[in-house]
Image (cartoon, rainbow, N blue to C red):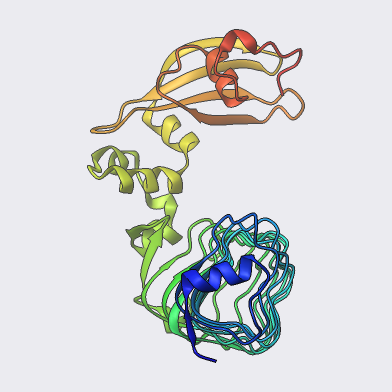
Length: 334
């Protein structure tokens, strides 16, 4: 069959007259199309976009394309005989649970696919983005990422990375709160972001790798020895992003205590005394926190609030999600 232009192909598909094995040149775009119900089998398209198509519930058998984007799709699985050469983007496809064994594609984007609990064996990619896949427990026992990027930010149930993972350009496991270590033998050529993980040291193979903390380049001392960060170091830091990292690592409570924060307001709630504290920061908004005590555990907490807060009640209302403090009247504050 000869190649058909994208506009003609779109009309045939939406009218239900598209033949099997149709070859489409150009960009076949069905973004948010409410008319699209099915695609013809053995469809061959250069670039196919199916983002937010609400009534397309499955891909056809024999689909082939250079680039496929199906963000916010309703697919639960991807056909085993699919062929995507360059990029397969399935971001925020929240019903998706299965990908075909041996799937090979240049770039695979599964960002926000929260129903995915595992990835297929034999997966072969250059770039893998699984950020926000909060139910993903592990990567496959056998797979390949070919000197590209692994973005796993926010995969909170991911406990380990596999030993076959040996060579990456960039690694982002920020907010992988269950991840305790990186595999020995892993090399990362550019940078690794390990913020808010349980990783306490790098494998020998990663010694010298540039580190990031929430996208900010830092050194190993800041990552692994936050107890060495001083109040004066934070106050003297002129870069606002770096100062936020230093605050994050030291902790607001320790910083305000050591910096002798100014008491802006003080009152009591069912937990006892509470205080609104402030520490000015050079070339940045001041650090303002509400210090409260939990009435059930008696533990003390320091919660950051906007610098515009003027009273403890106003700050507590903001924390509870109220724009108007007068609307916040809890019987018991916990």
